[in-house]
Image (cartoon, rainbow, N blue to C red):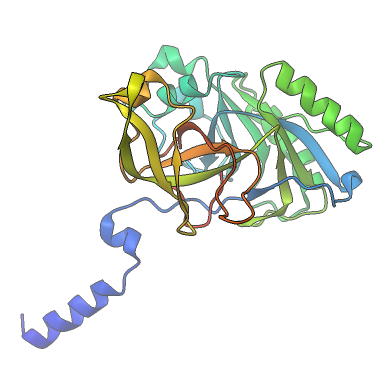
Length: 292
């Protein structure tokens, strides 16, 4: 092969997208949520429970995480699903996020464990209609699938903010994580916007682990805190929220974690009372993401 052709092929290779060169998975184009804020017209939105599971995207042929990694579900779990994409949450119940992750992340699916999982559907990504229309069609799709582990997330209207807060309190009291609000007139757009809002008793976001800081006192010999960095480059420590097991075997460097917080420090921009929650289910995050 002559040198000119080799040079041309190398130049062409360097122009390929980085994920293709690295053999990484292409994430699906998902609709992502902003944090709730009160200056919205509540009547424009449908409200549902925010399910604490693993985001699942059926692309018409295979089940994927939001990072684009394949989910190795048993064949019976996805048998008979439509060729159109489905967006939902792989969920095993309130307060059982870790169990959901342990089942979904297995390379060899545990048939008995997957019997616990429900695919809770909340949207049809390629349907051209508004959310109110998509939700009606989603009900028909779920009925046509006719499998008890594929369910349609119930949507409801809430008249005022006091009733919305009461609904949130009731869901949290029962072990739920919070609420999701879908704008009825919105189309499915693969971006983060006010068309989809999340409401929880606290705020959360994601950051990448860049350091393990040694513990002192009762934490001597273990990790005392994680040093993390946001997508915007802000660094701070996460010391609270780590279990004894996580202090002995901390989240690895480079992985993305979800943390909760209560507001932002006006001077430093650092989240107030930041507390580690968990490793993100697929261990990675898009550059701009906050937790869904």
